Length: 178
Ligand code: PRP
Image 1 (cartoon, rainbow, N blue to C red):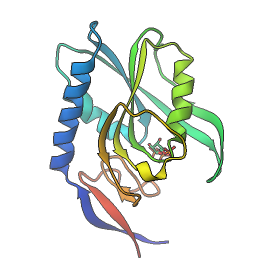
Image 2 (image 1 turned 90 degrees about the vertical axis):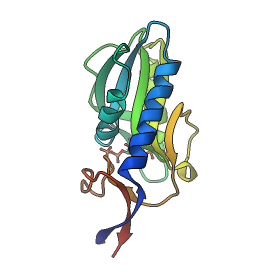
Image 3 (image 1 turned 90 degrees about the horizontal axis):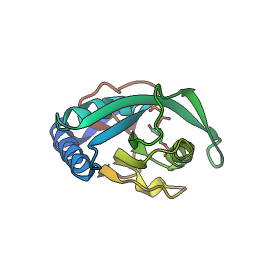
């Protein structure tokens, strides 16, 4: 199948505005110790995460860590296991953790990952996603901060890829099958 880029669904300006609002919301809700560990799930979330944390106030204690995971299973079932390719560098025990994802789709990756992270006893565990393809959900997952709810269409850019391509686009665009 060949693909080409379609129309812009989210412009760089609207993404930047929403990222700023999300950072404000997170800073406002932050615990009284004013510290947070932002956990980015590679690869797509790295783009969103770096913009998000730079919108957070200077007096906030913001730490950044990354994980690379994949959930086992085929297209219709999931074994309930997350395979870790790259784990966090630091312990999250007793920390206020926010998991940052570029997109939540079926919800399987996030729900498995949250179970895994809960087992490490953070003080709090929240989720921030840029995009929510809510129509595709197969399992309930609590999203504390959501950038945009989008329809079930193939999109790329701002970290989202098509077979590894087009992550670097500043805008988020539809992909069209040729
Ligand atoms: C995307 C996204 C989530 C997952 C969401 O990652 O970053 O991790 O898919 O899908 P789900 O809700 O159906 O589980 P992807 O596997 O595309 O990896 P990438 O970030 O490296 O592109």
